[in-house]
Image (cartoon, rainbow, N blue to C red; front, side, top):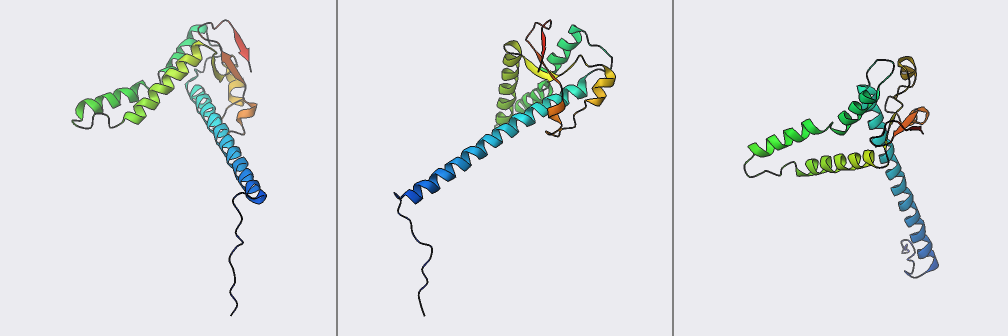
Length: 164
């Protein structure tokens, strides 16, 4: 019987090894980039869905209604935070049981508030009338989001709406 050797070993400093490492690094970098892009698209999709669910049905929104809508968006986690605080007050030894969720909510609220007050918040176009709003509905599919008209609301100054 002949001895069949396994796969041929490659020297760690060879050109072939360096080529394999380079290809693996490129693939992992590309995968990370794809995941980051998907996360951004999912967050934007969730934001658009929230605004579509909470937009009033009247034809034209006033500046105060738009401001209230944005404030409601920024305070959408308040009930969950109250529940976490209530659970922490009841629990004896496990007072920080939901700490990771609480920290992520606080970070999200801080980031979105800062984004709104500085560079602006991206949301659905709130100037589209009732009939146009139905045609441009978004159902959570990222491929449909490309045709969705979005608006950049700049901070507290609602006078300047710029379309994206």
